[in-house]
Image 1 (cartoon, rainbow, N blue to C red):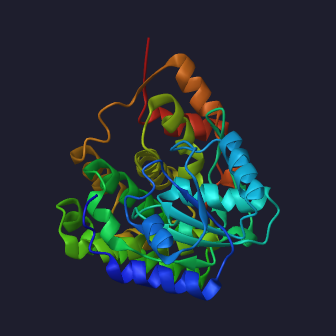
Image 2 (tube, rainbow, N blue to C red):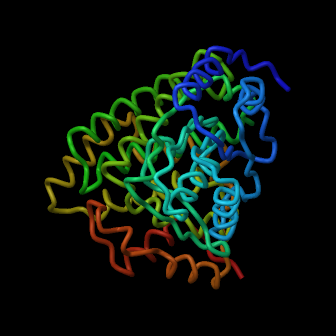
Image 3 (cartoon, rainbow, N blue to C red):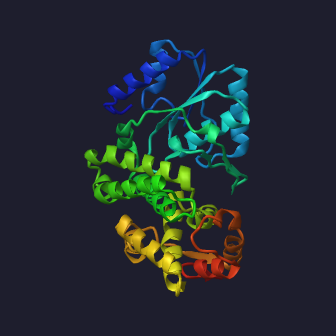
Length: 343
Protein backbone atom coordinates (compact mmCIF):
# COMPACT_ATOMS: atom_id res chain seq x y z
CA UNK A 1 0.00 0.00 0.00
CA UNK A 2 1.22 3.46 -0.86
CA UNK A 3 1.53 6.06 1.84
CA UNK A 4 -1.11 8.62 0.94
CA UNK A 5 -0.37 10.89 3.87
CA UNK A 6 -4.12 11.08 4.41
CA UNK A 7 -4.20 10.82 8.20
CA UNK A 8 -6.27 13.98 8.56
CA UNK A 9 -8.90 12.63 6.18
CA UNK A 10 -8.99 9.26 7.92
CA UNK A 11 -9.46 11.12 11.22
CA UNK A 12 -12.29 13.15 9.69
CA UNK A 13 -13.84 9.91 8.42
CA UNK A 14 -13.72 8.18 11.79
CA UNK A 15 -15.10 11.26 13.55
CA UNK A 16 -18.08 11.19 11.17
CA UNK A 17 -18.64 7.47 11.72
CA UNK A 18 -18.48 7.95 15.49
CA UNK A 19 -21.04 10.72 15.29
CA UNK A 20 -23.41 8.77 13.03
CA UNK A 21 -22.89 5.51 14.98
CA UNK A 22 -24.30 3.07 12.39
CA UNK A 23 -24.97 -0.55 13.30
CA UNK A 24 -23.60 -1.98 10.03
CA UNK A 25 -21.97 -0.24 7.07
CA UNK A 26 -22.11 -1.29 3.42
CA UNK A 27 -18.62 -0.40 2.14
CA UNK A 28 -18.83 0.13 -1.63
CA UNK A 29 -15.56 0.31 -3.55
CA UNK A 30 -13.47 -1.43 -6.19
CA UNK A 31 -11.96 -4.86 -5.61
CA UNK A 32 -8.82 -3.18 -4.27
CA UNK A 33 -11.02 -1.96 -1.46
CA UNK A 34 -8.46 -1.09 1.20
CA UNK A 35 -6.03 0.85 -0.98
CA UNK A 36 -6.65 4.13 0.81
CA UNK A 37 -6.98 2.81 4.36
CA UNK A 38 -10.64 3.58 5.02
CA UNK A 39 -11.79 0.00 5.57
CA UNK A 40 -8.79 -0.64 7.81
CA UNK A 41 -9.74 2.46 9.81
CA UNK A 42 -13.25 1.06 10.29
CA UNK A 43 -11.84 -2.26 11.47
CA UNK A 44 -9.46 -0.57 13.89
CA UNK A 45 -12.27 1.57 15.21
CA UNK A 46 -14.44 -1.51 15.64
CA UNK A 47 -17.22 -0.49 13.25
CA UNK A 48 -19.10 -3.40 11.68
CA UNK A 49 -19.00 -3.34 7.88
CA UNK A 50 -19.46 -5.56 4.84
CA UNK A 51 -17.75 -4.86 1.50
CA UNK A 52 -19.48 -4.71 -1.87
CA UNK A 53 -16.96 -4.73 -4.71
CA UNK A 54 -18.67 -6.78 -7.42
CA UNK A 55 -19.42 -4.17 -10.07
CA UNK A 56 -17.95 -3.01 -13.37
CA UNK A 57 -16.13 0.25 -14.23
CA UNK A 58 -19.34 1.12 -16.11
CA UNK A 59 -21.70 -0.44 -13.59
CA UNK A 60 -24.51 -2.64 -14.81
CA UNK A 61 -28.00 -2.47 -13.34
CA UNK A 62 -27.72 -6.19 -12.54
CA UNK A 63 -24.67 -5.54 -10.37
CA UNK A 64 -26.50 -2.82 -8.46
CA UNK A 65 -29.33 -5.26 -7.79
CA UNK A 66 -26.77 -7.69 -6.35
CA UNK A 67 -25.58 -4.86 -4.13
CA UNK A 68 -29.13 -4.29 -2.93
CA UNK A 69 -29.26 -7.94 -1.85
CA UNK A 70 -26.01 -7.59 0.11
CA UNK A 71 -27.34 -4.38 1.68
CA UNK A 72 -30.61 -6.02 2.75
CA UNK A 73 -29.23 -9.39 3.80
CA UNK A 74 -26.77 -7.71 6.14
CA UNK A 75 -29.30 -5.20 7.52
CA UNK A 76 -26.99 -2.30 6.67
CA UNK A 77 -28.04 1.11 7.90
CA UNK A 78 -25.28 3.27 6.38
CA UNK A 79 -23.31 3.29 3.11
CA UNK A 80 -19.72 4.36 2.57
CA UNK A 81 -18.50 4.71 -1.04
CA UNK A 82 -14.77 5.11 -1.67
CA UNK A 83 -13.69 5.44 -5.28
CA UNK A 84 -14.41 7.13 -8.57
CA UNK A 85 -17.77 7.87 -10.11
CA UNK A 86 -18.65 4.21 -10.59
CA UNK A 87 -18.37 3.29 -6.90
CA UNK A 88 -20.29 6.37 -5.81
CA UNK A 89 -22.97 5.87 -8.48
CA UNK A 90 -23.39 2.23 -7.39
CA UNK A 91 -23.86 3.34 -3.79
CA UNK A 92 -26.47 5.90 -4.83
CA UNK A 93 -28.32 3.38 -6.99
CA UNK A 94 -28.31 0.79 -4.18
CA UNK A 95 -30.06 3.33 -1.96
CA UNK A 96 -32.62 4.06 -4.69
CA UNK A 97 -33.31 0.45 -5.65
CA UNK A 98 -33.50 -0.62 -2.00
CA UNK A 99 -36.10 2.12 -1.44
CA UNK A 100 -34.21 3.04 1.69
CA UNK A 101 -33.64 6.33 3.48
CA UNK A 102 -30.10 5.20 4.37
CA UNK A 103 -27.46 7.93 4.40
CA UNK A 104 -24.34 7.86 2.20
CA UNK A 105 -20.80 9.06 2.84
CA UNK A 106 -18.79 9.50 -0.37
CA UNK A 107 -15.01 9.67 -0.61
CA UNK A 108 -14.14 10.52 -4.25
CA UNK A 109 -10.74 9.32 -5.45
CA UNK A 110 -10.76 10.97 -8.88
CA UNK A 111 -11.09 14.61 -9.92
CA UNK A 112 -13.75 14.47 -12.58
CA UNK A 113 -17.22 13.04 -12.13
CA UNK A 114 -18.54 15.12 -9.25
CA UNK A 115 -20.73 12.12 -8.39
CA UNK A 116 -20.36 12.86 -4.69
CA UNK A 117 -22.62 15.93 -5.02
CA UNK A 118 -25.10 14.99 -7.77
CA UNK A 119 -28.55 13.41 -8.02
CA UNK A 120 -27.54 11.19 -10.94
CA UNK A 121 -26.34 7.61 -11.01
CA UNK A 122 -24.81 6.56 -14.33
CA UNK A 123 -25.64 2.90 -14.96
CA UNK A 124 -25.65 0.56 -17.95
CA UNK A 125 -27.90 -2.26 -19.11
CA UNK A 126 -25.98 -4.73 -21.28
CA UNK A 127 -23.61 -1.96 -22.26
CA UNK A 128 -26.23 0.68 -23.03
CA UNK A 129 -26.68 3.68 -20.75
CA UNK A 130 -29.61 3.27 -18.37
CA UNK A 131 -29.12 5.93 -15.71
CA UNK A 132 -31.33 6.94 -12.82
CA UNK A 133 -31.80 10.19 -10.96
CA UNK A 134 -33.33 11.30 -7.69
CA UNK A 135 -32.78 14.21 -5.34
CA UNK A 136 -32.88 11.65 -2.52
CA UNK A 137 -29.64 9.91 -3.55
CA UNK A 138 -27.24 12.85 -3.28
CA UNK A 139 -24.64 11.69 -0.73
CA UNK A 140 -25.21 13.21 2.70
CA UNK A 141 -21.52 13.50 3.56
CA UNK A 142 -18.33 13.96 1.53
CA UNK A 143 -14.65 13.68 2.39
CA UNK A 144 -12.39 15.21 -0.25
CA UNK A 145 -9.22 13.21 0.25
CA UNK A 146 -7.18 14.72 -2.55
CA UNK A 147 -4.13 12.64 -1.57
CA UNK A 148 -5.80 9.66 -3.30
CA UNK A 149 -5.06 11.34 -6.63
CA UNK A 150 -1.42 10.36 -6.15
CA UNK A 151 -2.06 6.87 -7.49
CA UNK A 152 -4.35 7.90 -10.35
CA UNK A 153 -2.81 6.83 -13.70
CA UNK A 154 -1.89 9.65 -16.07
CA UNK A 155 -4.63 8.86 -18.61
CA UNK A 156 -7.23 8.82 -15.83
CA UNK A 157 -6.07 12.26 -14.70
CA UNK A 158 -6.51 13.49 -18.25
CA UNK A 159 -9.94 12.09 -18.99
CA UNK A 160 -11.53 12.65 -15.59
CA UNK A 161 -10.38 16.27 -15.54
CA UNK A 162 -11.81 16.73 -19.03
CA UNK A 163 -15.09 15.30 -17.77
CA UNK A 164 -15.18 18.01 -15.11
CA UNK A 165 -14.32 20.67 -17.71
CA UNK A 166 -17.14 19.46 -19.97
CA UNK A 167 -19.59 19.36 -17.06
CA UNK A 168 -18.79 22.99 -16.29
CA UNK A 169 -19.19 24.16 -19.90
CA UNK A 170 -22.40 22.22 -20.52
CA UNK A 171 -23.93 23.45 -17.28
CA UNK A 172 -22.95 27.01 -18.19
CA UNK A 173 -24.84 27.02 -21.48
CA UNK A 174 -27.70 24.73 -20.37
CA UNK A 175 -31.24 26.09 -20.65
CA UNK A 176 -31.63 25.03 -17.01
CA UNK A 177 -28.66 27.12 -15.86
CA UNK A 178 -29.16 29.51 -12.96
CA UNK A 179 -26.98 32.23 -11.50
CA UNK A 180 -25.87 29.73 -8.86
CA UNK A 181 -24.97 26.98 -11.33
CA UNK A 182 -23.09 29.43 -13.55
CA UNK A 183 -21.10 30.63 -10.55
CA UNK A 184 -20.14 27.00 -9.87
CA UNK A 185 -19.22 26.51 -13.54
CA UNK A 186 -17.12 29.65 -13.70
CA UNK A 187 -15.18 28.78 -10.55
CA UNK A 188 -14.61 25.21 -11.75
CA UNK A 189 -13.31 26.43 -15.12
CA UNK A 190 -11.01 28.93 -13.45
CA UNK A 191 -9.49 26.15 -11.34
CA UNK A 192 -9.13 23.91 -14.40
CA UNK A 193 -7.28 26.58 -16.36
CA UNK A 194 -4.97 27.36 -13.48
CA UNK A 195 -4.09 23.83 -12.41
CA UNK A 196 -4.73 21.28 -15.20
CA UNK A 197 -1.25 21.46 -16.73
CA UNK A 198 0.46 21.11 -13.35
CA UNK A 199 -1.92 18.30 -12.42
CA UNK A 200 -0.85 16.30 -15.47
CA UNK A 201 2.78 16.96 -14.52
CA UNK A 202 2.02 15.40 -11.11
CA UNK A 203 2.52 18.63 -9.18
CA UNK A 204 0.94 17.64 -5.87
CA UNK A 205 -0.10 21.22 -5.18
CA UNK A 206 -2.65 20.79 -7.99
CA UNK A 207 -4.42 17.84 -6.35
CA UNK A 208 -6.69 19.78 -4.02
CA UNK A 209 -7.79 22.48 -6.49
CA UNK A 210 -8.50 19.89 -9.21
CA UNK A 211 -10.68 17.90 -6.83
CA UNK A 212 -12.44 21.17 -5.97
CA UNK A 213 -12.89 21.80 -9.70
CA UNK A 214 -14.60 18.44 -10.02
CA UNK A 215 -16.87 19.09 -7.05
CA UNK A 216 -17.93 22.52 -8.33
CA UNK A 217 -18.61 21.20 -11.82
CA UNK A 218 -20.69 18.46 -10.20
CA UNK A 219 -22.68 21.05 -8.27
CA UNK A 220 -23.25 22.91 -11.54
CA UNK A 221 -24.70 19.90 -13.41
CA UNK A 222 -26.71 18.92 -10.35
CA UNK A 223 -28.69 22.11 -10.98
CA UNK A 224 -28.41 22.63 -14.74
CA UNK A 225 -27.84 19.05 -15.98
CA UNK A 226 -25.66 18.09 -18.92
CA UNK A 227 -26.56 18.86 -22.52
CA UNK A 228 -25.91 17.47 -26.00
CA UNK A 229 -22.25 16.60 -25.40
CA UNK A 230 -23.16 13.85 -22.96
CA UNK A 231 -26.07 12.65 -25.09
CA UNK A 232 -23.72 12.34 -28.09
CA UNK A 233 -20.92 10.63 -26.17
CA UNK A 234 -22.24 7.24 -25.13
CA UNK A 235 -21.88 5.36 -28.41
CA UNK A 236 -18.29 6.62 -28.70
CA UNK A 237 -17.70 5.01 -25.34
CA UNK A 238 -19.47 1.77 -26.26
CA UNK A 239 -18.36 1.31 -29.88
CA UNK A 240 -14.94 2.94 -29.84
CA UNK A 241 -13.92 2.20 -26.28
CA UNK A 242 -13.31 5.86 -25.54
CA UNK A 243 -12.99 6.86 -21.92
CA UNK A 244 -16.10 8.74 -20.81
CA UNK A 245 -14.20 11.99 -20.28
CA UNK A 246 -12.57 11.62 -23.69
CA UNK A 247 -15.89 10.98 -25.41
CA UNK A 248 -17.67 13.98 -23.89
CA UNK A 249 -14.75 16.33 -24.55
CA UNK A 250 -14.53 15.24 -28.20
CA UNK A 251 -18.27 15.79 -28.63
CA UNK A 252 -17.98 19.17 -26.92
CA UNK A 253 -15.45 20.38 -29.50
CA UNK A 254 -17.54 19.54 -32.56
CA UNK A 255 -20.94 20.46 -31.14
CA UNK A 256 -19.49 23.81 -30.11
CA UNK A 257 -18.01 24.32 -33.60
CA UNK A 258 -21.32 23.37 -35.23
CA UNK A 259 -23.30 25.84 -33.15
CA UNK A 260 -20.92 28.64 -34.12
CA UNK A 261 -20.93 27.69 -37.80
CA UNK A 262 -24.69 27.30 -38.10
CA UNK A 263 -25.72 30.35 -36.09
CA UNK A 264 -26.63 33.29 -38.28
CA UNK A 265 -29.19 35.44 -36.51
CA UNK A 266 -29.53 34.27 -32.89
CA UNK A 267 -27.90 37.12 -31.01
CA UNK A 268 -28.59 35.56 -27.61
CA UNK A 269 -26.80 32.35 -28.65
CA UNK A 270 -23.90 34.33 -30.09
CA UNK A 271 -23.50 36.15 -26.80
CA UNK A 272 -23.79 32.93 -24.78
CA UNK A 273 -21.08 31.20 -26.80
CA UNK A 274 -18.83 34.25 -26.63
CA UNK A 275 -19.33 34.33 -22.88
CA UNK A 276 -18.53 30.62 -22.72
CA UNK A 277 -15.21 31.26 -24.44
CA UNK A 278 -14.36 33.96 -21.92
CA UNK A 279 -15.39 31.94 -18.87
CA UNK A 280 -13.81 28.66 -20.02
CA UNK A 281 -10.64 30.18 -21.44
CA UNK A 282 -11.11 28.09 -24.59
CA UNK A 283 -12.41 28.32 -28.11
CA UNK A 284 -13.47 25.03 -29.69
CA UNK A 285 -10.35 25.20 -31.88
CA UNK A 286 -8.08 25.60 -28.88
CA UNK A 287 -9.82 22.72 -27.12
CA UNK A 288 -9.45 20.58 -30.25
CA UNK A 289 -5.73 21.35 -30.26
CA UNK A 290 -5.48 20.33 -26.60
CA UNK A 291 -7.23 17.02 -27.24
CA UNK A 292 -5.04 16.37 -30.27
CA UNK A 293 -1.87 17.04 -28.29
CA UNK A 294 -3.11 14.63 -25.62
CA UNK A 295 -3.62 11.91 -28.24
CA UNK A 296 -7.38 11.80 -27.79
CA UNK A 297 -8.25 12.40 -31.46
CA UNK A 298 -6.06 9.66 -32.91
CA UNK A 299 -8.86 7.23 -33.82
CA UNK A 300 -12.02 8.87 -35.12
CA UNK A 301 -13.05 6.18 -37.61
CA UNK A 302 -16.13 3.98 -37.73
CA UNK A 303 -17.70 1.46 -40.05
CA UNK A 304 -20.91 2.58 -41.74
CA UNK A 305 -22.85 0.27 -39.43
CA UNK A 306 -21.21 1.77 -36.34
CA UNK A 307 -21.82 5.29 -37.64
CA UNK A 308 -25.54 4.60 -38.16
CA UNK A 309 -25.82 3.10 -34.68
CA UNK A 310 -24.08 6.15 -33.24
CA UNK A 311 -26.32 8.63 -35.04
CA UNK A 312 -29.48 6.74 -34.13
CA UNK A 313 -28.30 6.18 -30.55
CA UNK A 314 -28.62 9.79 -29.39
CA UNK A 315 -31.31 10.13 -26.75
CA UNK A 316 -33.21 13.18 -27.98
CA UNK A 317 -34.77 13.60 -24.52
CA UNK A 318 -31.26 14.46 -23.29
CA UNK A 319 -31.18 17.38 -25.74
CA UNK A 320 -34.10 19.31 -24.28
CA UNK A 321 -31.96 21.65 -22.21
CA UNK A 322 -29.33 22.23 -24.90
CA UNK A 323 -29.28 25.88 -26.03
CA UNK A 324 -29.91 24.86 -29.67
CA UNK A 325 -32.48 22.41 -31.02
CA UNK A 326 -30.93 19.61 -33.06
CA UNK A 327 -32.86 17.48 -35.55
CA UNK A 328 -31.73 14.17 -37.04
CA UNK A 329 -29.83 15.91 -39.85
CA UNK A 330 -27.97 18.07 -37.34
CA UNK A 331 -26.99 15.01 -35.34
CA UNK A 332 -25.70 13.26 -38.45
CA UNK A 333 -23.85 16.37 -39.62
CA UNK A 334 -22.14 16.86 -36.24
CA UNK A 335 -20.89 13.28 -36.10
CA UNK A 336 -19.92 13.49 -39.77
CA UNK A 337 -17.75 16.53 -39.05
CA UNK A 338 -15.28 14.44 -37.05
CA UNK A 339 -15.92 10.74 -37.70
CA UNK A 340 -14.47 9.18 -40.84
CA UNK A 341 -16.55 6.27 -42.10
CA UNK A 342 -14.45 3.37 -43.38
CA UNK A 343 -15.27 0.03 -44.97
